[in-house]
Length: 201
Image 1 (cartoon, rainbow, N blue to C red):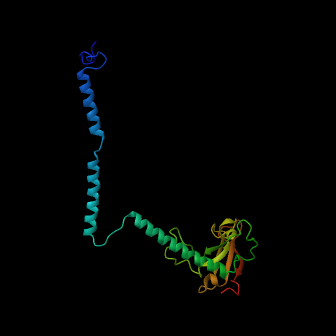
Image 2 (cartoon, one colour):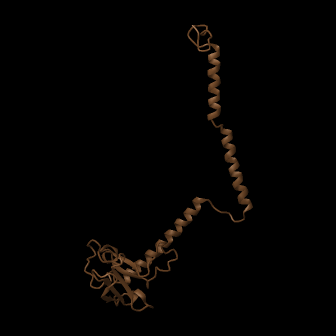
């Protein structure tokens, strides 16, 4: 009986010939060499990168930390901004007596939309307020969620608006509230004027 190479089967008659065995071994070696990456090559690559970074650090007197440190620093700064903003907003709510400043607001604090929020007179904008220039007592006022951004007529959808009567005191003084006239675009009527409680200082 002959194999694929035309040679006789092994001496015991149950295996491939010597040529078949040599061919199989050669193919196995080629596959291993082409697909496997030797460990010494990987180690030298990592060593090269480390040396390159250390040379760059030595050449540059101002060391620039990696992305992880930068992201951590930004997150810490953002947390600090949010914390300071929350302190100012809590103070605004206290100065407004923990009540909505909308004239004759009938929304109970336990009702949907009754949560008291601090609304901006001059909005933060799409980029937020990283310098906290607009997060001041004069630019914030206590408004319930219903009149701020949840009700059918609210400050966010443009159907209600407010403006301070005293530009120096801002929201800490008397504030005029207006609402849009139904069916007449651009026309507003006066809802009323409110001031902070007298005892809150």
